Length: 92
Image: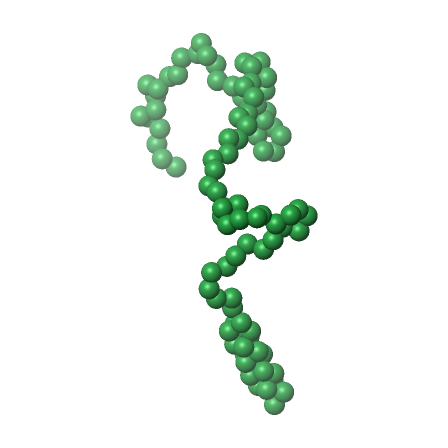
């Protein structure tokens, strides 16, 4: 008998709490550690693009590492790729 009563109580509490949502236009609260903006133009958010720092270019002799810390082998710049035998590979 306790379990159905507790279930009904929990469901009714969840329904009551879900009805406590905020409605209408939300405004940004005033800042905590600085003075509040004086006019409405200062309070509106501005969409500004931010430039991210690009990664520093690597020289040809520095190694590349994967996520686990293993070195990624570099391609041989003078070696030819033999694509003639690729059609002979059988699946599985």
